Every structure is written in C-alpha cells, then in structure tokens.
Image (cartoon, rainbow, N blue to C red; front, top):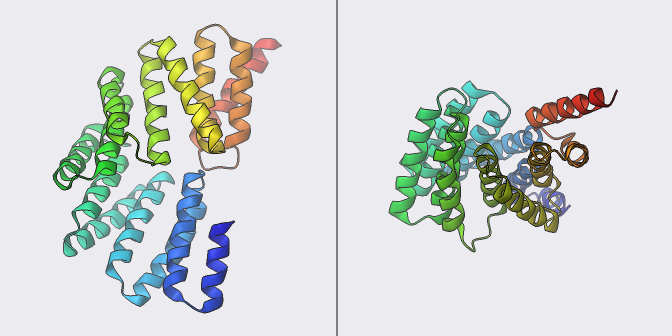
Length: 273
C-alpha cells in the first residue's frame, strides 16, 4: 500500500528519479512475496528511467535485480546476460559490494546446471564480503553455499553453512535472508534424519513468519513441517499443514513447491479412498 502511494506521489510531482526509486522498491516487495513476474515488470520500468537519466549506479542495481528475477522465472540465458552487464558496471564504478552481490546471483543461476560452479561463485562473493566487512554478503554467501550442497545431495556439507550464516547474521534485520537460511537449515536437518531439531527449527521459522504476517515464508515452512510430520507418522496433521501451505502459496510464482503440494494432497486423498 505504501509502495503504491509513493509511486502515485512521484508521478504526480513529475519527479522521474523518485519514480525510479519507488518502482524499484515496489519490485522488491513483489519479489519478497513470491511474485517475481510482477517484480520484473516494475524493475524494467525503473531501469528505463535510470537509463534515461544516465545514473550508472542505479542502472547496475536494476540490471542486478533483473538478473535475479529472470533466474527465478527460469529465463536463464537472459538472466546471465543481465548479470554480466551488472558485473561490468560494478567494476567500472569500483563497487566491490555490488560486484560481490552479482557473483552471488551468478552462483544462484549456475546452481541449476552446475552446483560446483555455483559454489565457486559464492566463494568469490564470500571472499569479497570478508575483505570489505559486509555482513549481509557473508551471511548470504554461506546460505547460498548451503543450498548448492543440498542440490548436490550433500546435507551434511550444507548444514554448517546454514548454521554459520545465522551466526554471522546475528541481530541484523534481514528477514528475507534469515527466512531462506532457516528454511535451508530445516531441510538439511530433515534430510540428515535429525527430526527433533528440525521440528524445533521449523517451529521457530513459522513463529517468525507469522509475526511478520509473511504468508509466503510461512507457506514454505509449512510445506517442510508437513514432510516432518509425515515422517513421524502424523499424516493427518501433515495434510493440514500442506493445505495451509497451498492456500498461502497459490497465486505466487513458487510453482515448483505448489506443484509438489498438490501432488502430496492428491496422494492423501487417494489414500483415503
């Protein structure tokens, strides 16, 4: 609501820079609520403004965000092109923070085809984050390395990276990064058969998501909680969690999880016939 109000005011004033800021901020909000398609449209409009104003730092930032969003939408070739452009601008600006973030996004992109190459990108990001003392970069790098190890089927290697990511984050307020790290931690623990701790960590994630009224993060957590309940033989409770998760995630761009939830619920319905 506030993002849309800011955009209306900027346009009413004819202030292009303010409109560019408002579009980028609103795009970020759409991304955080699982709507990367809507976020991409807003990002492209913001990018058009910054190119017209020739503000290189914001061109770099929008290209970086564009690459991230295209990756989320499965448009991998376009994503890499945008990220490479952003990386060139970061080096032109001598912006090590921006360069580190772009290496992080490239790692997320490579995770789909070559998780080992993804880990190398994340390690480059981590090294730059260590050099400039950027806590969020360090935290994100460990989280992303953890997810790459999960994709490789290596939960034991993933676990310490999720733990280190949360340790580094400490009291910093970065809910998106924190929620993704806690979700990865739950997945690693579940795959390692550490059900007791996984249930506790999942409950903590759910409490934090509900406190922020974050239905998207809550839906992802309930998906994992249902899997944990099923493994304990509590199938009825598991289906309740999956129904709640589907209601929270339906209409978002998290189609992989939505598809799995529908399959899980369909399996439950078949079992009851």
